[in-house]
Length: 157
Length: 99
Image (cartoon, rainbow over the protein chains, first blue to last red):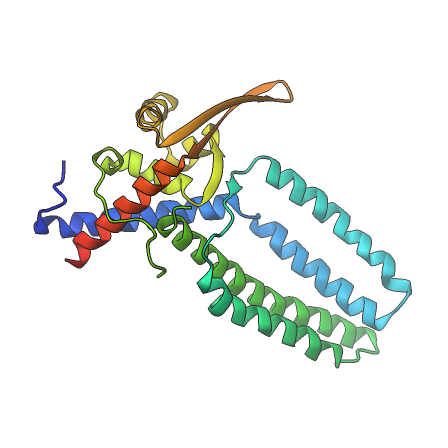
């Protein structure tokens, strides 16, 4: 077995640390929400958000699109490992996660100024909302996963 | 990187590659099902059981059996002692690489 005191085993320790991070990342991804669910939530939100603004109140029934997503979420959670609540979250509060969250709020507010009146504009707004929303949500998810890996490997309680 | 909350402490039991991988898999979750863990690690039932027993005997993991919809499941979680030992071991590995 590798002796921890021997400096020549630095490389071995570095490899072990890499493997630890990789394994933790794998479990973080496996215990998180499925990628398809995240994409669907952003797609439905882009459609609902745009149509609510373009055709109120006829488009309010579109909120029903969230029902199958809720069912999907519940089913996905039942067979997954239960994520541990984050204990020490400085990287969430001050890091990339918080920055992308603020950008998300800014994006929503900016898109409210875009008054889509015809079908082409409505479609364009849905596409822009989806693409920009997907970009920000993916970045937020990556920052959250990173915080979970750090929390898992560094926090005891 | 956030500061480790456990003192660097090399742990021979955790240092074995598969047991280190088991702990690394359990650390971001409250619990994971045996089947899920086995799938992530890509090992046989008997191999995983053997290493979990060793970790369990040391008080590092908690193994709970339960029945859900008529099917039996096994849920594995790191205990506080196991988490402390794992975080301390990771901190010790970092010290080795830094030193």
